[in-house]
Image (cartoon, rainbow, N blue to C red; front, top):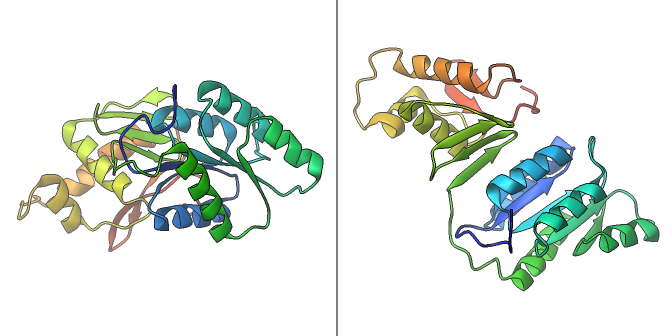
Length: 241
């Protein structure tokens, strides 16, 4: 995450750091509808790891996180990327708290409760000033919870641990992570991972899903789920079933 944001080509990437899953989901939807790509993180350590992996163009950062204080996260982000635009969120509206955030390097400040439209407008202003809205579509890095997949290098990490996958396992995980929370049928998976009209030989998809689970979910809260009678989906481990 060295240098100015936007050094990679690609769709604008917005890191969203908040420990409230419902609010994070709403902000992710708003960011997607604005034409940007959301990267959610539920705590400070995840935020710093994801920031280093995806090189965001802007950050929406809650001031109160369950592990590292939001201001500490802000200072570390600012140290590693001095020009990264950061919009702070807080439930505290006292003047001294706003000054603390701005003094630590935040570019703008929004107090909860807020409207999603206001967040998008403030982000758009920060991105415009940073020159990041001119970037083109980039699908080279996918981040879901603590799972990171890099298309260009075909590398996968769960947390800080590298995950070794076969070529087809990687393609299958890439497909699932390209459609987070969406249920994909066996037919869709066969068509996109193998080829149109491919004879799946019965339980081919189940075998590869099982292999992915052993490698991705082993020792962690599960991310890959079976929707009985429908297909398969992937979602962040912290989300309830």
